[in-house]
Length: 348
Image (cartoon, rainbow, N blue to C red; front, side, top):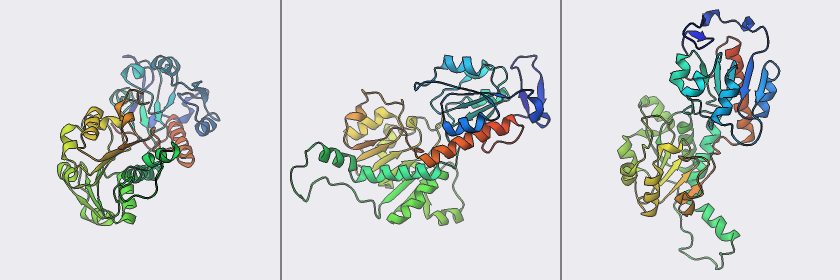
């Protein structure tokens, strides 16, 4: 966050130093636009804000967002809303963009910072829930649960027990490679203890030895981690460095018996390369909660494969977590509008 707020976004605009901002700056309720109807956030914000909420089940278009946010003090959006340079430049007095998400790659942080707009997000509250899903995908993929479910429901289970029927892979005692050992990656590492897994990790910065010992993890280069792991779980933000990080070269380093799990961002994986990897058995399978294009196209070849488990971006999708995210997103926004520090601010 810069040390001043832009009020008009013009070359001759008036600027206030951050220390001078006072909640009494508003002679009337601050105006806020929400791109989704999120009950808990509406409940919190409507008490002290002039609130406009996008109607309908369809996502608002960029044109809708620009029209509605142009004269607003605050914006509460989700990760499906692209808040880029065009949107930000079109605003006149916007002071805060509060994202109902832990990711913020859908927001042009540099432009927001340049215009003195605070960007906030909702980490921590969804850590455990997302880690649960990552491990769920790992278990479901390895034991072919979705294939088995379809087999039973479709009436194709027509014979008794066979020694080679629906064989999957053990999890207990196997090697788990975690790429990105932040909050969620660390939570996944803790869950692996119950399965007596050996845990390797790769991150931009290596952890202190004491932290590695606490989590029972071993550091590896990315290449060595891919070569050694039976399961690889991705927990990285999406940025220029991680876009298509998992390309053909990286996937070919993995074992033909290994599984790839992604609950982070879809574009970290080159989907065309992943499709080749699954078809040609470079890896045994994958579990995905995120995709390069969401919702996934009906023509996407991933839908035709039986060695992959697919979920519709539901990493944080529990009642408890989504309500807590709404509370945090609303309080982030209100704090900034009231001249206070937000609970979680994205640093440029």
